[in-house]
Amino acid sequence: MGSLINLERVLSKAEQQQALSRGEIVSLLEAGEEEAEAIFEAARALRSRHFHDQIFLYGFIYFSTWCRNDCTFCYYRRSNLQSPRYRKTSGEILDIAGSLASSGVHLIDLTSGEDAPCLEQPDGYEPLANLVGEIKRRFELPVMVSPGVVTAAALKQLAAAGADWYACYQETHNRALFQRLRLDQSIDERWEAKLQALRHGLLVEEGILKGVGETAHDVVDSFESMELIGAQQVRVMSFVPQAGTPMEIWPTPDRSEELKVIAVMRLLFPDRLIPASLDIDGSAGLQARLNAGANVVTSLIPPRQGLAGVAQSTRDIDDGCRTVAGILPILEQLGLEPVAPGRYRDWVTAEKRQLARQNADRLVPAI
Ligand code: SF4
Image (cartoon, rainbow, N blue to C red):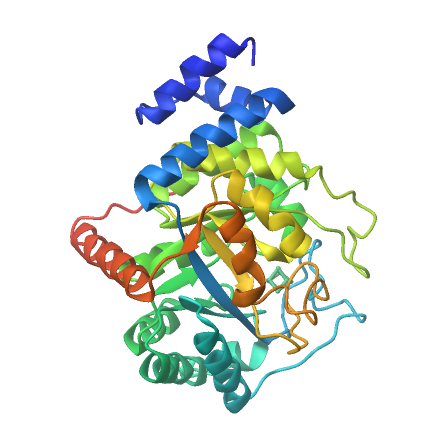
């Protein structure tokens, strides 16, 4: 950023929700420490305008760590022999969902690798669809499904069962980088799965990884793709090296990079949901992410469940810091509070209604 005066001008445009040029967005992403504080402040002001300092809390269940894929950054890649493998039973999943629901989360996120038994049978997603239906019936909470790339038929089945969200992260929208990260996978199929989800009335979360070799322009391309698809939730997470993977000695980026992306997302998508993930730095990193403009806390778990499936799978798991009760003092310190459960359901319902209206004449965007 050339000068603070320039920064003020760019932030004032963002606050008035005027479009920012590519150069302006890049300069925000490349801002120094002092300028970043001003960007975070503008991001918080926009969050406050749209969400009144109320925060959404997501409970997380990683129900299968089996995956057919071999993403170079992922601990659960199929060839990593160090990765613990499990498949939770329906009973176990419902028990965890029940604990999460009574702890006060606003949503249950059902995540897995691309698990072959599900993928190889024509009705392979029926058990997941049944679980979604049962969780909705018992706990009356919105449900997000994150099972990787699945067929249009499976998405239809999950939507019909009551799923509200489909999370499926490209991680990058740079084709060459995608091929280095997600070996032997199709960037177009992954994108198309999200389009199919939207067509079936599911809200979509899109996401990127920071610190995997992307440029600032790649990040701007990702913002444009998020805008193009109309993602209702957009996330960024810092890369964390995982033992037993080809990227185990790749450095984790300075967290200021992720924080600036969160803040710029808030400027560009002021009324969208933006997670502050506990997966990277645990509760110790929550305050900074919320200060950068995030308005969702993920991935909360019941204490002592030994759940895997996150970048730092042991951080804060057993000491209660990743529970709703564990993070409430942090929200309070920041003058934030969890939204009333009904308000989150209302938000989801309003977005789904708007999506249904858009679906009537939705164009098919390509990246
Ligand atoms: S990132 Fe997802 S698709 Fe890739 S190996 Fe890990 S679990 Fe599988």
